[in-house]
Length: 189
Figure 1 (tube, rainbow, N blue to C red):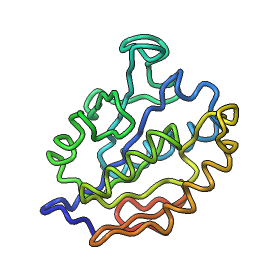
Figure 2: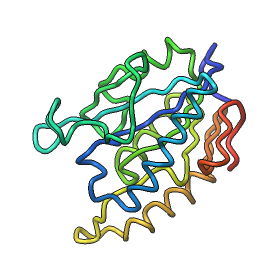
Figure 3: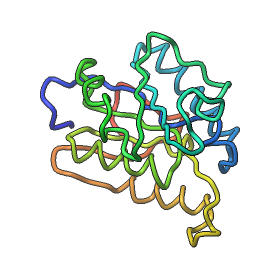
């Protein structure tokens, strides 16, 4: 369990499911539908949903249509929204404060991009003392094969594989499918 004191709660962390980020993403519609399902389940179970939204000075200008969260998802105004400029959602953001205020020590992670912000945030969470569960069918990425990366389905499969077996002292990692997410339980591995 988490190494953070007095942090018994779980939160769903939805990373960068924004118009431009997932416009060309692998299995975009299925992943967005799974994220939507996770958000609905978290809300029913009164689990905090924390939204993360990336911005930069090129294609994701704060306030632009490209920057907006996809229309299929509907963040509630009462749900925390964390703005970021780096891959790791903790880096130079309010995420740690938000999670501390909610007494969260376990994260269930979904969103985009698998090979950048998802991986960075998972590792950032573990090194900061959080338990971190990746929802195996609720993250995606673009095709980066032109730059030497494997095809997106292989990037996703590899991330799921290594996160399933990731370990750290006093913390848990793992993967679980959307259908098997148990916000009260531990990772299915």
